[in-house]
Length: 112
Image (cartoon, helix red, strand yellow):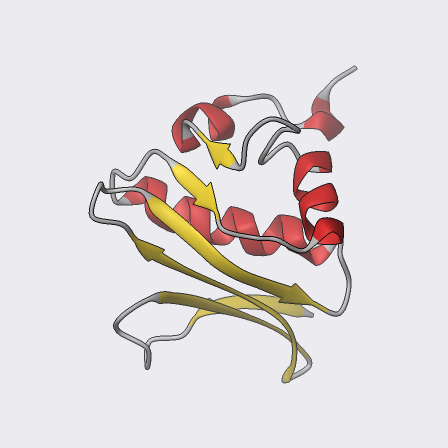
């Protein structure tokens, strides 16, 4: 079973760790900017498909706290490619302008 949990030990930034059978398989780090945006600063995982769950976890946390914009401070080209594929960013921007609008969209797997 894969679980994604917020690390409560870290207070100055938001860190989620993904574990499978007690073993760390991924993580994501973010922080709030002075403008009230979520800045995602690090993303790693054994499997690129886990990026979706990691990013959605941190976005959901931010959304529940009224934060509606996310900025991806990611430079790794493979990670950017996957983030684009999951619909978090576009070719033109590393900004998700509305987290709430993102979650209001129909899931790609639900489309007919």
